[in-house]
Length: 115
Length: 115
Length: 115
Length: 115
Image (cartoon, rainbow over all chains, first blue to last red; front, side, top):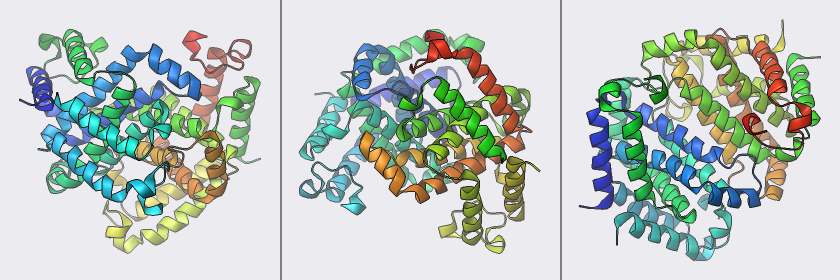
């Protein structure tokens, strides 16, 4: 079995053992995804470029936990919606490759519609 | 090679072909993770429970794209920080299992410190 | 002096006494605005409609503190950018009145471009 | 009448003319506050310190609109919850003054519990 499916099954098992499906409607799942992403971002608040680098190294374990929280909501929400996340990423990468052709996008952080 | 590693390699390749590493500091990556998660959430804004379910089904492809965006920032940020996301999730699931014992947490949406 | 100006002056005084202007670039201010808004939202995570109402009443003081945090970043950021917030709201209300004419928008939570 | 009250009354009038109170539960209001704050933040995504300054000046009107959106949800949510925002800010400033004494906090961007 593929890795994301295998991990998602563990997350679902954890949830179902606690009878939490009743709370995991798409809206609260999406809301929780934002809240966990915000906890990742909080690590870098007020920090200069150098401090960001340094903090990323020193607090690797703490940030790993926050990223895991994001991943768990992401994998479960995708599954609840019947979305194959792996396929969705492949499709989006292909779409982005068209929106951001290498020769036009190289070295620029500009939205595709302004390239 | 495991699935997340394989997908992450594609994301990195996409980024490096465009010379975008220079913009992908941890702070902007975390900030972008929040912005993409917010785009997922926007799908469910103002919607009642029934409308949320219905929208999730009707806009599956659109939401899949937003989830893919979250996943791409998540996988790359983890990689930039030297974090093995798969391991991080396993560790967090174990930790959560202790914080939320089945018999105490079943059917409740309460923070572990208030159980 | 008008109320928002008067409050903003206090916020600026608080900041300058601590020599924090150096950290309050627009990016970190906007980032902090998001993080504080997320703390407001966290109050309502996983809660049903009834629980949301109840929680809003029982935790009024705690939520007031979070809203104050949002307001403080909002007022200061507007000021840093040379924006008159009061005027900006008046302008936006006028613009919204055109985007959402009463007869078309009544009782609907739909984006103006889909009305 | 004080300014925030006066503006809030206009926002409430706008809402009630459209019969939107039914959608403006605290959870969706808080969620919308986050989404609008995210739109402010998006203005500064991927931008260097210099670009942030420059963008703040060039896109003052666009950012003013986003800040107005944040303000409108903030003022209405406070009102819906029976919170006097002006008082809440005064209280929070006093509390922060104790958490961040000038002599300890000057020139540092550190959480009060680590000062």
